[in-house]
Image 1 (tube, rainbow, N blue to C red):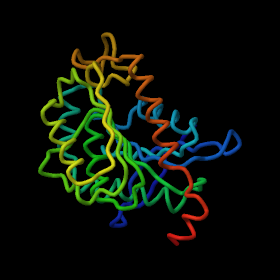
Image 2: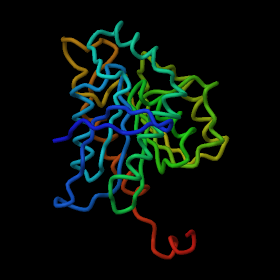
Image 3: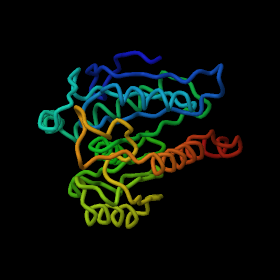
Length: 249
């Protein structure tokens, strides 16, 4: 099981995060990932997502961007999310998380990916713009305002999972973000699924707190998207061949 730790932002301030470490006894540690929370906060679901990545061989760190607050109420979640300054969080908290993993947790390659879900996907995309240390990025459903983007600064490959029945993120804006990434030569792959928002979140189904009619789990598409993510991370976070390491220093 994972645990809460502290790490340093880029400016040196400390932030809490949930860390799930891959077990080297179970197999090679293939790399590391920073996970950007959904708008509910660092809840049990996000901890579970971190554990799944650890079981797949990746150290996983989830920064607590709400500083201990979680919610199941959409209005409160919206208020908490509004108080996150997106570009600052990407440049400070999330870039700091990437650097922490690179400096303190051993893996075969030393590489780190940024992965975001819903509003966290917007943060992940901005972190790709702000952090040259990131080696790969995975987006689930969400994007930031287009005017926040500095796509020319992205050097890492990007994989995206979009929901074609998304009630929160507009399809024309998704296409605008895809066009922007491609126009700047980003190594981008986007998949579109005939599913609603949060289709990979198994807690987004049926009645109950934290569940909305616009969100619905789709196990079939969730499995396909997860497999694509694992294949992408396995390819992009693998160690560099010895000859390439020698040539690039």
